[in-house]
Amino acid sequence: MENQTCYIEVRGAAGGNEAKLWASDLLRMYYRFAIKRGWKAQQDEQTLKLKGPGVFDLLKYESGVHRVQRVPETEKRGRVHTSTATVAVLPEISESEVKVNPSDLDIQFYRSGGHGGQNVNKVSTAVRLTHRPTGIVVTAQTERFQEQNRVNAMALLRAKLWELEEQKKMKEIAGYRSAIGSGMRAEKIRTYNFPQDRVTDHRLGKSFGNLEAIVDGNLDKVVEMTQSLN
Image (tube, rainbow, N blue to C red; front, top):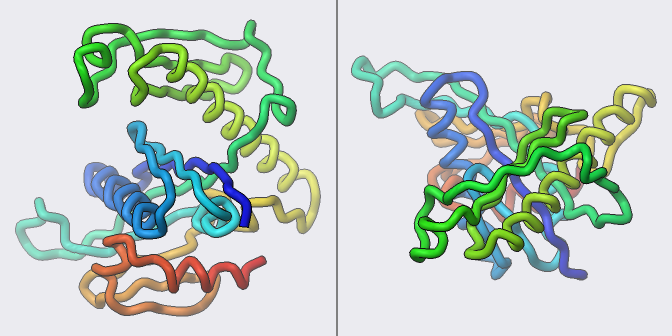
């Protein structure tokens, strides 16, 4: 199986602070899953960059809305809340596949707020790109050098522009299925029910027990079953 690179972007949706916490939990789940499989994993804010054999092919059906039902730590009455987060799994796109006009970009350099050496925090090495025609904003700040962060931000921007084009195609062509499958972001694909210790994949019509282990990165069984969605 050939090495692939993909990006996983997770954002809190409905549910306020609990949705943001859930997005962080999902990022951690995918990060741990990647490490257990021996893939190279790098996190930059809300985005994971993963590299390994067949990474995108295995994870592309994770795109969509992930719903959680649990009692938040801030809930004093023990009520179960429902929150959601969106997951987008994007392949690495080459410069020849998606061309970005430099004149369409606003580029800002700023100091990284994350952990790192003196160079990372004292020099403006982080990069924020704004693509004016679409309004897409991407950032990169994990590398020590500004140029490498710029390269990383451009790669993420190309992936997001590719996703935008895929979404347009899906609207224009009846029955069209993109390389990400039919999921994309708008579709609720999975529910994680903590009180019942159950993960349900709505596309497969199947539930899995041992929720804590799954959220801890033991996703193999779930992910492998989604390959039948091909």
